[in-house]
View 1 (cartoon, one colour):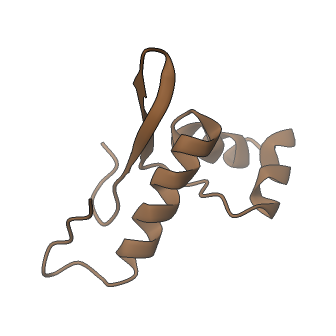
View 2 (spheres, helix red, strand yellow):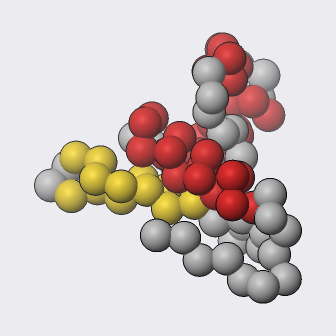
Length: 78
């Protein structure tokens, strides 16, 4: 499902899709990847794949398994 507010940039659609997909594929919030990039750690090699290292993606788990993800963009992270 995707919901885009009228005054949101069109590019936000791709951004939120990437954030949600990354959260699902890595089974963790994209904030963790963003922190890895900011700290210049070994996690930088992840970016060679189509992953989003920007805060706003969160996995949704059911029975300890990642079932889906949420991506948010265009507003403040908190």
